[in-house]
Length: 187
View 1: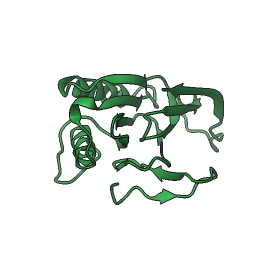
View 2 (view 1 turned 90 degrees about the horizontal axis):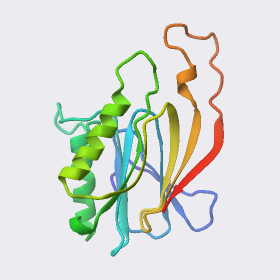
View 3 (view 1 turned 45 degrees about the vertical axis):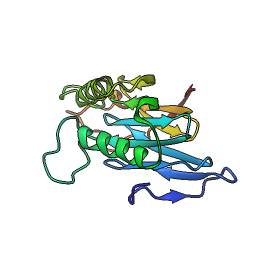
């Protein structure tokens, strides 16, 4: 597990929640672990090896190459760190499977960084011959992701529509983002 991903005790008895924040990643073979993150235009890649039951998640802000040494907000660096950490936990690169989430267009009228992130993630997996067995990319809504690294199960909760908040005319007090009841579970 990467140092910045802090585990905590969740309401579910016996499980350990690992929150993966922007620019970070985590890897574990703990059968009781659940990884979580919240995404807008960022993308999270969930990778797992179903044979040795190890998995991990990253959360990157921008596609492309690393412009500053050690800066993990960039997709290339985030993907390489995640894969290398999985290999250190005995995962086999040829057995890895991926699930992708995020890449939403959060602010209309500006560059669609979410689409660029999604395209990068798909192309990276294709170049590395890692099959993507599930994805939820694009749209205009934020997502809350729960990933079980030992099994590869992933679940998302779609949050309120961010496109409804205009950029040019800020509101005096923004309305709280409400979660919708549309859950998606990828097996």
